[in-house]
Length: 267
Length: 267
Image (cartoon, rainbow over all chains, first blue to last red):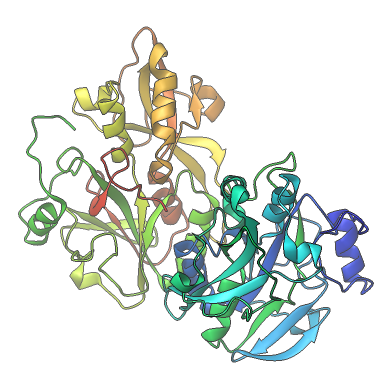
């Protein structure tokens, strides 16, 4: 997310991933394009998982869902979802069994790929709007927390909403709300401002995912619905087989992010 | 849609349907509540049909999708989708086999119910906004046309968008656009204004569904995406089994329609 990092075009980065030459994080290396969380499930689970996303659009904004077996999404027609991410995690019965750079060996005709919006687009917009993001300044992952706010369940899929937290100076909270509200495809406006306890978060210094960041005087913690939610929920239901992107290693699409002079990822 | 018709509360009307005492149209008899098109498909088709709706939100705005076998939607928890509509159509392999007032005999544990927004909510809002609707004045069904504009396909589901047409006085077209844009759960703003040929409509006097209405001097035809689209598409794919509401006999939910002092049907 820092201005000094080498920038790639989306297809350039995807081809480097495909050849095994890039296996790093995707934040900040392809500014201005929609990135997406990836979750892959067998067709048997696809209806209920799609229904879960439809019922929970704030944590699970769908960028695109592919037909069974397909690997080239419309949001990047030349891409191959089996090779073009920097890293993948393979799960059996909800347990991580392998982290790999290529899932062609695992591919089956009944696998359905879900691309779900992530917060990178709105983070870029926040920074363009003059709001500093501490986790970016510190080179850390954003802090994420399981909350006591339950998602609307769908069939076998149920669980709590996961939120990300960013400390925002008091006088910029409204600005942050306004900017992110314009990104319904990337979780939209905050789900809560100020009181971690009201979300059931006991200790901000111990995030459930990502890294803790300090909150300074004059700042308030601001919470957004997080794209880790559907993954956490998918794994809690212990499907026999599931593949996700590795943390921070998102799918980079050809869609221009809203606020980057292009269309919003959401229709 | 006329002020002189007897008004019911949603549950009152549903119970009359359940007991077989009401089998008429639902337009204009429960003003202020969200009504929905109903499509019921076997689970085997549910993922692809949900994906079709997700990819085509203008003609297919989802009000709610139920888990397999369930008949009580969240938008009307006391309702039973098998009995509470005034009429149903049963299809086998895309062919109409029966029109009935109750589908309990047809019910199976693998059936998935889709409730899809209809235009009644925005028609009420148009009339409240001072725009007269000719088909209402004439006591006819709205005129609907298959277009040459193709929906985004999803698996086995594909087909043209169906639109409804309402003649609007030239000076009220912008007002009509503004009012309906506030109803994303009921098809939203017009998809086209003015030229039927650009949609592939040859003759406005011969609608594919509903009734023709005259267009007077100073009026232009305004076209909206229509909730008949998903039904037409579902039947074209000839699923072995499918149930829909009978034309004009919608499901009446407990949700207040937008513009009626309540929440929008869409989240």
